[in-house]
Length: 449
Ligand code: PLZ
Picture 1 (cartoon, rainbow, N blue to C red):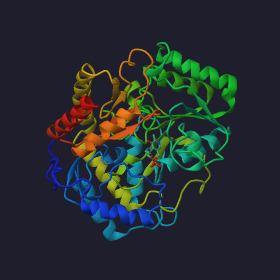
Picture 2: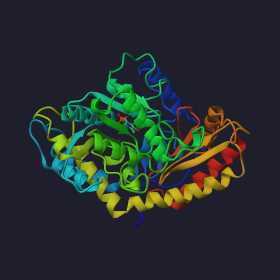
Picture 3: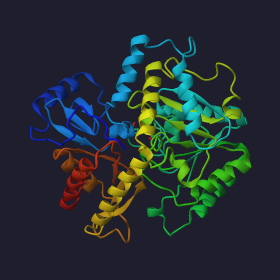
Picture 4: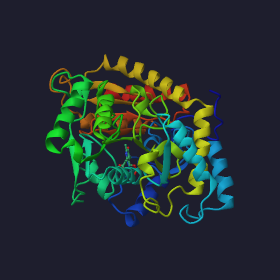
């Protein structure tokens, strides 16, 4: 990979006050006008961001190990994305693809049809957010099959709209008080190797879920199985080998649409273009967002042509779906991913993080497990002395570590059903030097906890 040019020096610097006076002033203004329901995990306000560095309004520089929740894989202001956006926006900001169509939408569809797993005939439709893509994948599956039920998994996260809240597992904060939820959503057990009561093979974990589906719903009632190949918000859970292929094979036999939600795991993040590829799973439909467009809001459903083309003309759409500026950004971001071979880079980042954290796990008993794929790595924290027995979640240490790292200039995100997982999602263009510096900070924070 050739080094990506950056405007901001790729260096951590928290020598100023934290949070500084300008951030504090903004926090005050905010509390008077912004709804309390939208929370921010970091108390500083961004002024600039580039590569893997976020600079705050007081001049502090943070290493970003969250990428704005797995979005800025090509960096926070990739020159190719910036140039493409500028070029595009000078021509037109919007026409609405449903009114006056344009080429960049078609070009994105060509890219997605070629990059997603499987060489069958495919179609693509574009939206704005991950939740919107998931909703539309379900709409397509229901119409194409004439069935209603949707099967989802424990620990799943699919969004915050009404249908996607129903699809999401965790109540607080995503669903709490926001019901009633959409019907015909059924939840079955996930394969979560670290927390299985007794070791169970992936194939058997899939059979366990399938038995429940057949007993409680009936295969012929099921429109779709929806699953994140690596669960994101639920705790970076990688199912046991064989779990996904067994589910996909069962879906094929029974005419159930297999939808892979790759909103978080897609676009090079796990060391492949899509996480489904690690076990040669070819989803019928795949939902994408986040990393797709270098930070611009864009999402997509790509999949079997017979399913997507089953929908009547006008059945899919939205005012902004596939906005031309977002499409231009996506084409540029995909260009950077190819040029820089970011799947390989994600693999390298994963190796660096994995070997470092596994060595660290030998030194402390609060690390229950180090897991993940590629540059989607996490540590699950447990109470001291419970790692070999009850594996009691340790959300307190999780919070303390994230706060301590932040004060030293490293932005980390948490996740997990039990709030006890620290996830690492660096921009894939992060330099080895900067990554090692961030891991040094993380290690110190963990050993202090
Ligand atoms: N599917 C697998 O990870 C978004 C949400 C953070 P939207 N994950 C981050 C939060 O607290 O809101 C996500 C995902 C998977 C769907 C979504 C939803 O994507 O673009 O946030 O709608």
